[in-house]
Length: 239
Image (tube, rainbow, N blue to C red; front, top):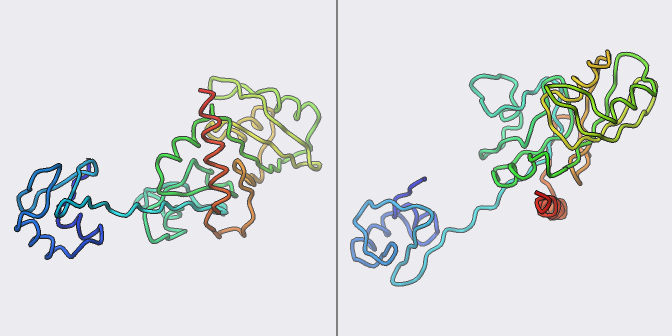
């Protein structure tokens, strides 16, 4: 559990400077869980801090939620030491964020980034049935047999993929809506049927459609976040 010095806590809460906080502590005007602390005492986020009996709370940090149109060649990793073309350095957001899920390096399209670990866990639970929509181009003409087999499940990675919606858009292009996130799932499904993916683009996650140019990002709107939270809550009830 992260610990913070009491003077730093009071400063970050906007109550006073660290120097002024030290004077308050020295004067016995500060309490932690009802007890007067020593100078330099560290606290956790569960501790109750009061000055002259008044409860001091740090302002709640507003979480960051981004929608990003990932270009081909960018890697969805937070390890900036290992991978040069990583998503974190590419976006260069001023505070720490991380991607929700991933798109592999040769793929492009919509991905969310945030600093909210709770929503990451909820969205990534495949059993929550959160839809992800993709437009796929393959290396040879699509047949009715290909569409039917993709819809009804393909044996990959020691399992059979869940039934899904697949629609042919033109000779070599189809749309697929998944509620699972197996590793390289669409590429493996196509390879099983002797097709090779030449372009993979994610165009929707849940209620959010891709509407920004390649390489650009935007904040999710309040309406989008409200709907995401509603979907997360509703699907969580099916556990």
